[in-house]
Amino acid sequence: MENKSLDLVLDIKVNVAVQLGSCELPMREVLALAPGTILQLAQKANEPVSLHVNQKLVARGEVVLVGDSFGIRVTEFVGRAK
Image (tube, rainbow, N blue to C red; front, side, top):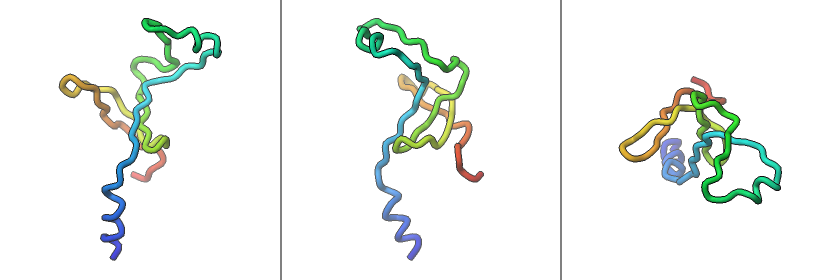
């Protein structure tokens, strides 16, 4: 019975997002954003990106190229027993 219960949730779609970095700006600068604006992020280029599932941090990893698209190689899980 346990496997059937688990099967019910395994096909549920969840939102997966990768956060490259962040910064804090005064609203004045946010309102002044225009095409071509460059924002400097707080993270360094060699720091891992964050992988979020339904807005919850679950892993960190590094950005990779997959053909013509970006991907993420997971390097560590957060808050999960190994």
